[in-house]
Image 1 (cartoon, rainbow, N blue to C red):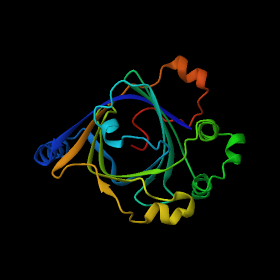
Image 2: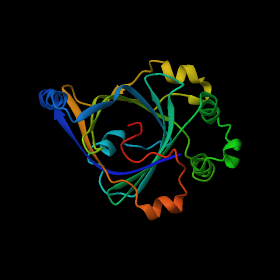
Image 3: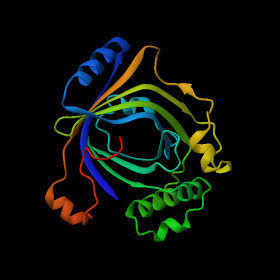
Length: 223
């Protein structure tokens, strides 16, 4: 399981400003492309407000769980938990297999209770006690640039979503690749720009969490 700590600020900008900023970034030497393509988020919060949380999400203390599928590839999925605490975001994430994902959406979750992965056990409690079931799908067309120093600048040029999908009747291939009937959540000619500042992880916290050699500090994981 991987851990990150960061803070971020988002705003909606026009397409002209987006092109200007993007061109300036790509002409500089202190960046690399971190993510470019489609990110499909399957959220466990039925009442999630995917746009206002993305834009100036505020200081509310929330825990948000999702399965993220990158570029319609069921072999490239991440189980993600983001805990917002007074403006700081604590992210835990781990790779998830197609079989594990399919069992989750079919509500076969007993195996999660005894998993060696803490994030699976955590989500199991949320699904059984708080009834957090996957039910909202959001597609982001995303470009993410890692800047010098490990920070990120992320552009979402499209955000579309749907609530009306019976996930328990689907297989993983359909969930990853199907073109659902989605509603756009961005006005025409608008882009969501997010600046993410990596905060790293305090040594004492890293020690308490007993991280493995494979854990990732902020700036090395999927966006």
